Image (cartoon, rainbow, N blue to C red; front, side, top):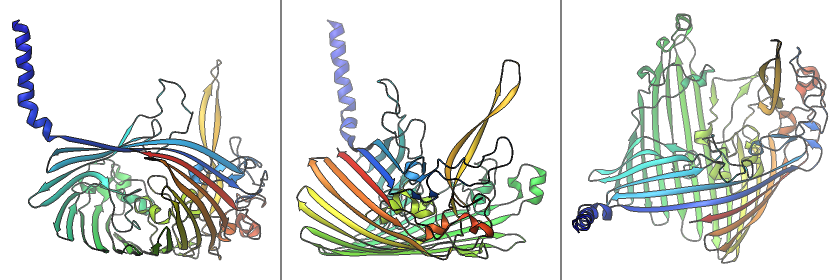
Amino acid sequence: MSRYVSCALLCVGIFWFTGDLACAWEFKMGGAFTSTYEYYSQQGSNGFFGRANVDRSAGTAGTLGLKPGDFASLNGWVGKRAKDLVTGTDSSQQYPILQIFPEIRINPAIRFRGKYRLGNYGDPNASDYFTNTRPGVDVATSDGQWTLWWITAQTPWGTIVFGKRPEEFGTGLQYDGSHNATGEGMLLVSDNGPLRIALAFQPFWQEAANQRLGLSSSPYYNLLDKSGVRQQSTRAFMTYRSGAMDFGATYMVFRWHAGPESQNLQAARSTFVPYDDLIRHGCVYMKYFDGGVFLNTETAYWNESINLIGRAPFYNESWRCMVETGAVMGPAKVSFLYAFMPGADRRNGALIDRQSYVQAGPNAAFGIFQPYTYLLGYAYGSGVNAFDLDRQGYINEAWVAAARLDYAVAANLNVFGSFLWAERSSHGHGFGYIRPAQKFTVTRIVNAAGNGTDQVAWSPYVNYRDNANAPTIPDNALGWEVTAGLDWKLLENLQLTILGAFWQPGKWFNYACIDRSVQNWDTPTAANRWGTNPDRTIDPVVGVQVEVNSHF
């Protein structure tokens, strides 16, 4: 009997001492499961790289090199989302994505949030698991990936935030936290009615500055070396939200230095050029929506100067802007977009040192263009390999004019259509900028007699590379694209989305893409027009995306 009494007293004690703690914790979880099918097809045999099954390349010298005709099967360029090159004219893929968003409220003042994602096994970089590539009940399709985690604390001095979280600000023209950008600085936010003021800093941020100078990825052999850590990493922003109006501004400053001490070898130290790097960027935005008319606009800038001792400084500056306006009229919504994304300034075959800087993945603007383009932006990265950190394409180095119409046929059914026209915003690239290429992997095989031979495996890809001797592309037209589709709510928390797109590539691609039917296109010279054939025809491209999405 004493044993039962002891157990009962133990249970009472556990509930007595942990009751308050258990009641203080709250757990909530949301999530989404999406199954996506995508199809891409060029409508004819006149592809981006010329006619199908034709290759008049010169080849590469040596027994392990490429031979004339080795590019003949690289017929279709279907975009980076479909792994670029195919033997025919079309491709398809299907992949499921599971995302879980947990929230733990530790007490009324502190809460933890995060994002858990199931991608492809062994690939942490926004990967997708392609259906049926790993069959088996006990065969893992994903190792599970925590992509976000951060804590928010309410204090008498304001809200303190730290951890990896979405970096969302303005319209998403430069800080698209809904789809791409993240921040990890220590943030202090003060709310005063409709006015919010915030200050952030990051005590450790090792940036690979050497990449901007065409050197190795990082100047220091130890990532944690204090000499290379940014000397300044601060950000301030303010927003004002009242009624139909929302506007704000942000400003960031980063500085760091690299000297010869970053090199561990004496020979490298004697030739290393010390430099100081200063980056400043930010934006000003405004949003207005009164229930009928809406207006979203933003101007964003990026300024960087790299001072090298004894050499001319590098200077990059970028100004991007967008205006989106429209109206909601009963079941209909009409939207108009104009956006300007600057491009590189190329003169006499080289980029000048005071050029418009072309921001890369962290500052991508996928969300701005996603409602208006599927092929030119999302699939093809606007022809300049413009893809964000999450492998989503967007439009860069271009100006865009677009329109979209949504119409709610029923409470659970919306149909939409859009039209987009785009042109290069600068003359930053030359003839033959885009070309099929193959990279090789060499494996040494040793037979029973001890003799070694090399086996070479070639992997096709699309290469974006300017030829300094080639003239600048004279035509800026990227083409036009139309999309149409529907959003159909089948059940509560279950939606079907179907999207179709048609894109006619513009004349810019005739100059930018080499033509495999040109003799010796892989050794471009003025005699063969740098491997291009601007007078040819490039057939249009169609794309289809079908998504079944369940939110919970």
